[in-house]
Image (cartoon, rainbow, N blue to C red; front, side, top):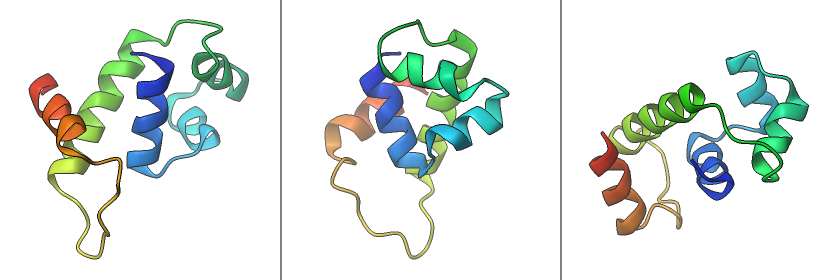
Length: 82
């Protein structure tokens, strides 16, 4: 997973760096390093995030407004990875 893709996952899920750190048990500095291309993203975290994003995109909340980043390319890519 690229740092750009990690950023998109966080946006889609509505999570901050702090929230990802809390949910994964990683230090916030580690999350910042992943986002800043300073270290490689843990593969188990990357796979877990891809699953969460796929579920989130397939099952949006009832009042959720369309996000501009949820274009056909991203949705197709997430569905293909499922």
